[in-house]
Image (cartoon, rainbow, N blue to C red):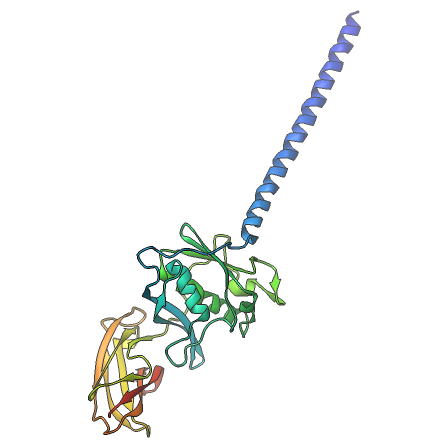
Length: 310
């Protein structure tokens, strides 16, 4: 009898141990499944389209406001980000309005180019807190050049969006995707190896144009014999050189002005050139440049046509 009771207790303990083991195994399996589900949900969020567009601020809807738009410019073998101040009709949030202007607008100053090929457009744009989720059409992958050129193009978008509004990050998608290939090009080429799942921030290591002009714009009609030049610069010794050439290429006036700081810091500058205007209206060329003090060679320049005389 005692032996039977002992065997019965051992059988119960064995069954109990088996149940505990099975339950423990199931618990582990459920936990693993939940972990994969969270990862899958995160992946789905990354691959979901931006969905829809933003709405304009009530006070600015339909108005034209100045927004910084970042283009690319190649000078002396170096590529620069070049901001231009455009008056943009606000039909969405400031961030989205700036992105649309970058994709479809036209650079004002000679030498500046749009970062993405013609036909590139928004498929979706939404704001998620301090992050802009931007879904671009497949044309953007046709950026000429290698991965470095592609990353510079995307950074032009990032700088444009984050400078236009209170946005810290830009999560860029192409046709709703953040990975894989589109048009045979790896999407990783567009945002580089250091991109995070939270999106891209401004890469402060990129070259900003040493001289950015605000005034005059190309084709400005200059009244009288004085041409005013304004902008922002981060140049060696803070010196911005100015030169005005007539239609024959002869220097009609030259001089310089100074900003309050030296590169890499940036500050506004303002200067003017006095000249004898021709009797009839002519197209002359203004050159604003950074000169090498050692040999006088031009390190960086912006040239634009102006109308004088008449």
